[in-house]
Image 1 (cartoon, helix red, strand yellow):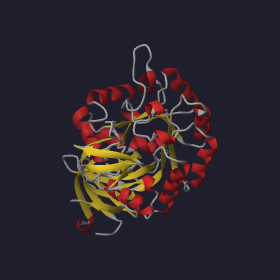
Image 2 (tube, helix red, strand yellow):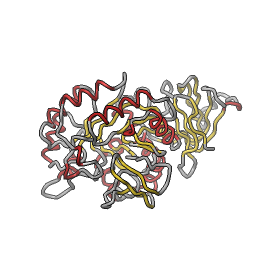
Image 3 (cartoon, helix red, strand yellow):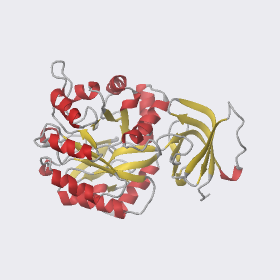
Image 4 (cartoon, one colour):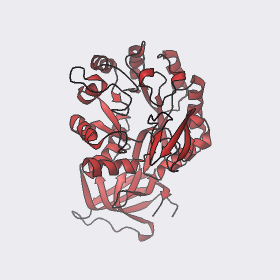
Length: 387
């Protein structure tokens, strides 16, 4: 089947519940019908164009992904971009932000240009996440310390000028750096999601950054000042300051399940984003890889630098959803919303993406009962079929 008009039958995962016996109509890339067959008879679908699955979910949106399938966005190669988007589509991701690393400015600009030149394959690139170079060397983690620098508004404007029309932007920086407050205001005025990450900021510094326009926390708990009862730090602010969205790497390695549960209770299900922070090794298994110019070893699903520092992950979005259900114990619909509706809302895409609703783009992930992705539709077209 190669067309763009489908019927899908299965359990519909909605933002607040699961409809166990549901039906979806997709026509020309748009959801045009949605039925609860237990409550109403519904139309009779065409068997020749009916796709069936256990859980029909909105496609996942990953705002923090560096690579996959052997490729990295920092390769600056259009074919590498296509490899990454195809790889993540296998796991239910239908939209993502191409995420960069701390690197020379020209390398970041080339990564942005490669996205614009890339053939469409798999997940749609919705924009860019510039992670670094404006980070604190003390909390650099796997960001290359040789290229760390202070925030520069002229450099920011050169990034933005290279983007494509409608691109969404997220920028991760350390709020305590000289010039960071001005950069936060500048980015927020231009509609970017400004995020605190790779930071040693105090609670007070984070609170001031939020007042300036910061509204996101990059990989909560990791590469940031921790919680202390007399100095709540970055983590304490992330869990308590109003108006923040926090992203978590729910691979069972970066964050203990109990700490994930604390984040959900503190921020509520609507305040959490699931991300992968995936590197080029994702989808390939154990071995020797690179992250930027740094060597990385992947063993037993853990990606680490030579000194043992965690270096991104090999997590996939369907696995992140599974882990939140199994390790944290939240309902499936909440975990799916953390991977779809919440990022869509933060990126200003809630009106067109992020949930199953008539009139929205038909970005859909179909999971089996073990919550493994088996089928992915992007704008109504099958981009992965693993049934």
